[in-house]
Image (cartoon, rainbow, N blue to C red):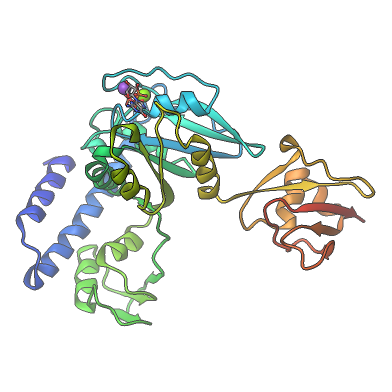
Amino acid sequence: MGILERISDIEAEMARTQKNKATEYHLGLLKGKLARLRAELMENQTKSSGGKGEGFDVMKSGDARVALIGFPSVGKSTLLSLITKTTSETGAYEFTTLTCIPGVIEYKGANIQLLDLPGIIEGAAQGKGRGKQVIAVARTADCVVMQLEAHKADYQIPKLTLELEAVGIRLNQGPPDIYFKQKKGGGLAFNSTVKLTKVTQKLVQMVLADYKIFNAEVLFRGDYSIDQFIDVVVGNRIYMSCLYVFNKIDQISLEEVDRVARTPNSVVISCKDKLNLDYLKDCIWDKLQMIRVFTKKPGDKPDLRDEEGIILRGGSTVEHCCHAVHRTLKADFKYALVWGTSAKHSPQRVGLSHMLQHDDVIQIVKK
Ligand SMILES: Nc1nc2c(ncn2[C@@H]2O[C@H](COP(=O)(O)OP(=O)(O)OP(=O)(O)O)[C@@H](O)[C@H]2O)c(=O)[nH]1
Ligand SMILES: [K+]
Ligand SMILES: [Mg+2]
């Protein structure tokens, strides 16, 4: 039996099995098996040729990469054509876009690469449509924009989330804080720092045994589920931030707009009426956790024009900034003066480890 058939067999069995106390272990085991088969499938795909597909190899460029994921005809290409200088063909029929079309969002001096992709449908993870290629591109992004048709979002969000989960992409969540280490002997040492309500030692032991792991140290530092534990065992998961973009709000009532706008991590837009598009750029900027800083020379005023800013990741230090200015600058670094919200007083004299904030001004003093 092929891997795909085995996967669908297990999925069918899980669907048949009622969820209750008595079936908890059986379902946990099935989840473990499913994760293993999917990992195998992904492995085979990357090994075999033609996995990537023509037209999907787009060079990374700019300060960050954002992938547009969504069902067909939700308006992905319309959006790209509106907020970048690139035109991507649009149409009232599904699968207008067949490859990856890159555009650039210019915002606050940053160049954010936005990738328009073919629509994905149910079963994409198994290769339906151009699903595999689309998801492979999504894995390379810093952030996913899940574009939805506002009046179909309740259906589209869970479906797309499942497709992404099937290939190891986790949205808007960090890796579970579970310590897991295989050992040579000694059986299973299982501990937790909090009360566990979703798993038991027995369930963890059974899942591990199914992976032929009998000796291991496991420490749960949070009340995680068996799925999250399996993520840690399988590894190779991608934790990605996701912005939900509800398009075509011109087609729904104001009450509905109000309801969907309250979904966490979401923006409501209309490409047709050009509604909220600047706010969308702002939300993408926030999601990417980018900051901009300005450098200045002694005695000069800082040049605060957009194009003069240096784009860094949130949490970046003076050291990151030095690196962004010039590779060798760090070697000559003596200290820096910083003006702005990260400075306790203006200017503050700081070292390489000082953490910068958005719109700080920095003057680097060399040895
Ligand atoms: N009413 C309305 N229609 C829109 C809006 N945005 C896009 N459309 C229409 O939706 C249809 C599909 O738009 P596309 O941009 O081709 O959608 P897509 O997601 O790129 O589609 P595929 O490439 O086929 O996956 C077109 O007829 C657009 O004119 C909107 O905000 N409101
Ligand atoms: K379309
Ligand atoms: Mg398109």
